[in-house]
Structure formats: C-alpha cells, structure tokens
Amino acid sequence: MKQSHLKELLENEQHQEILDQLLEFERKSDENLFLMKQIGYVFYKSRALGDLQRFEKALQVSKQAQELISPEDKVTYLVLLIVQLYVLNQLNRLTEAEKVIFDGDTIIGLMSSNEYEEGKEWIALFYNFKGNFYYQKEEWDNAIDYYKRSLTLKESVDTLTNIGWIYYHQKGKYDKALTFFERCLALSKTISNPHYIALSLNNIGFIYTSKEEYYTALDYYHRSLTMFEAQGSPLAVTMVTTNIGTTYRKKGELAKALSYHQRCLKIQREENDHEGTAFSLFSLFLITLYQQDQNNAQKYQKKLETLYEHIPHKDISLYNKIAKALILKESKRMRDKVKAQTLLREVVNLERRGYTAGAVFHLCELLLDELKLYGDPEVLIEINNLMQKLYLFAQEQELYSNACAALILQSKLAAIEGNFQQALEHLSRAEKMAEERNLGRLVLKIQNQHRILNAELDKWQELTRRNAPLTDRLEHAKLEEYLKEARRITGR
Image (cartoon, rainbow, N blue to C red; front, side, top):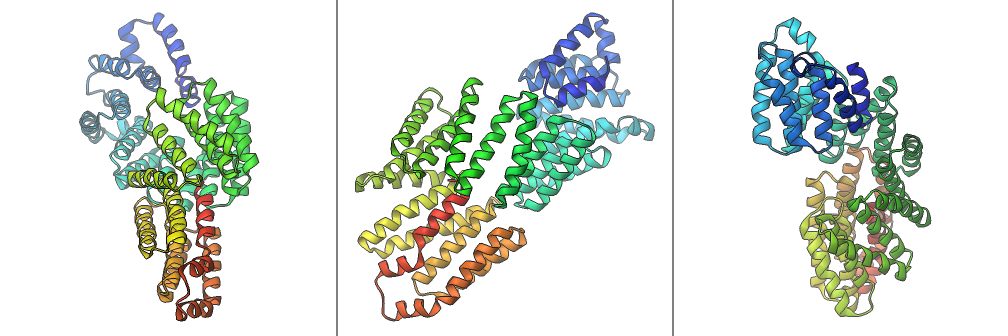
C-alpha cells in the first residue's frame, strides 16, 4: 500500500476508508514490524482516528509505536511526536502539547544535514502543527512565523489556509488573506485536488463578500458549490450555500437569499447538524422579518426556541435571544420595545464577533424611536456611547467595515449636536481606515458621505443657529436610514 494513496484519502477527508485499508494491511503484517517499519502508516492511522474524534485511541497508537522506536531514529521519532502534537492540539491540552513541541524542537536540532533533508516534509508538518498550537493560544504572530517556516520547507494548502484566516480574522488584512487563498487555489490545481480547489474558491468568495464585491464573491461561490455537489460532500455544500445566501441577503436580494437558506436548512436537518440548523433558522428569521412577513418570522423564531430547549448550545442561545428581541422590537407596545432593548443590551455586552454590530444598530434604532417620542438628550448620549463602544470593539477585533460604520454614525451624531469639525474628522478617519485596508466600495460610500456633509454645511449651521427641534435635525441627518444600511452590510 502506497502512502501517497493514504495521503490522498486524508486530503479528501475519507478517514474511515483509511482505517479500513490499514486494518487489512495490518492483518497481513507482523504487528511490531508494522509499527517499526511503516511509521508513515502509523501517522495516517493516528490522523484518521483523531479526525474521527477518537483522540485517546490516536494517542495510544502513537505512544505504542514510540516505545519500539529509538530516539536515535530521529525522523521516525519526530513523526510520532507530530501525531501526539496534532491530537493534543485537538484536545486543547496545551501544557502537554508544549512538552511535545520541546521534544520535537530538540530532535530537529540534533538532526544531521542528511537527516534534515530526509525528514523535510515531516519537519514542515511539525512546524504547521506548532503554528496551530500558537493559533489556539491566540499568539497570532508566533503562529504566522511557524506557518511560514513550514512553507519554506513544503507548500501546504492547510498551512496557506491557516495564514489566510489569521490575516482575515485577526489582522483585518483582507488583501493579504486573499493572496494566501489564491496561492491555495493555485497549489490545489497543481496537485489536482478537487476538494481543496472547491474549498479555496469558497474562501476567496468569502473575502470578496467582506469587501462588498458581491458579484465577484458569488462567481467564486457558485464554482465552489458546483464542485462540492459533484463530490457528494453535504456539509461542504451547506457551508457554501450558507455563504451564497448571506451574500444575497447583504445585496438586498431577499428572495434569492431565502431560497438558498431553505435549501441549506433541509440538508443540515438530514445531516443532524444542529448548530448549522440553528444558523439557517436564524438567517431565515432575519430574511422573513425584513420582508415584513411577520407570520413566517415568528414561526422561525419559535423553531429556534424549540431547538434551544433541546440543545442549549451558546450559539443557539444567542440566535434565539436576538430573534426574540427583534420580534419584540417590531411590536407597537412600548413595554415590548423596552424588553427588546434589554435583550439587545445583553447581546451587546457579550461582545461576540459577528453579532455585536447588528445588536448595536438594532438597539440604536429603538433608542432613536424613544428619542423622537420624548426628545430626551440623554438618549442621544447613549447612542453616541454605543457607537464608541462598537468602534473600539471593532478596532480590537480588526472588523474594519464595522469600525467605519461606527465612525460614519458618530459623524452624523456630531452634526446633529452642531459639532461640524468633529463630524468631518470622523469621516476622514473612516476614509483613511478603509483606504488602508483597500476596501474600495466602502471608500466610495464614505467619500459620498463626506460630499453630502460638505454640501449641507450651510443647512446644518442654519438648523443650529435657529436651535431647530431635535426631531428636525434627526430627520435631516437620515440617521435611521443609515442604521438600516449598516445592518444590511453586516448581514444582521
């Protein structure tokens, strides 16, 4: 049996097939001979066991082999340490993983030039898993350092993908992430791996969605979806279908978004994917709510609530809480709106990436209604504080589109208060931030806001001079209109 065949099975996530084929191979081999001489097979067996969540068995296999291998056989010994590091990372047993890393670094340091050359691919994999170790510790620079060390020895789709997601999620550098995902795509085509090609196409689409280049994003997604469907990979199909639905929702094409999320929900239920089912129900809830289809929105909210009662997962709890808040927000009764405010404040205080911005915008809409009704300037202060909180959170999380949206809203609030210099400064900061991140479409939107403010300065000054009622200034600022636009962009 060739290890290249096992490698192909692993890349295509056919973990049980690996175990079945190795079991047959082991039956024909002396056990100790299998462990000592076919160490690559031990690696693939342990990886397959780990990927199937059979972590303790994976550790047992590698440690059993370790007892039979001399540390002088450095490459073989390193392979066993790699297996253990992989499993310990998966189990989040980072203290034990650190000990394995120390042993691995020691082994590599003692290798002769010939041994180093012989073990180059395994050393690359060790550095990749060491990068994963630092990824889990949220030491992003160390993670990137070891991923890049791995790449100097051998290019790997997994390593390139990991770097890309760090640049996207933790560094907020979309173009840098795009570069690594495009390298993934090129490498996937070189090694003729359909699974990795489809995955890379999806990841590239995700970046273009974040850059608000929706037509380009959808092109990549549809190519990815076609490939995953041909491969018969239902969970991968739901991943891409979700992204397509979310992109149509951000574009404002709600009927198309609804269709893709409904399709996704059907597959997730068939696959017993509870978390995926919850996200699809939440997405369908949002779409029907924005379509002003209250009956179906309430049905989806009730389904979310029922799912949470059976599976009290924290993400399902979050979706359920937001859905409840938005149903209450649409009520005409003030006491329901107050309850909605309470629930949304709870979500804001959770500071969950991907959900804080939407909760802030919905909460500000409620506060805006209160401001129009009672004219209490304290409410305007609270909205300003929420925008500042969102800005700081978005900066910390490298969510630059959200940070820019907060600055635009702060600019409008400054204009309402008659502080025009500060209003212009907020827009300048937002424009600079978007330009630095090469968010072209966002730059154009901010420049348009800048032009509108400059063109209306005389009107704003006239409103301030005559001490115009707050309701007049709110209407002129079109604050409510922009809050809805900001919600659409964040997809919440």
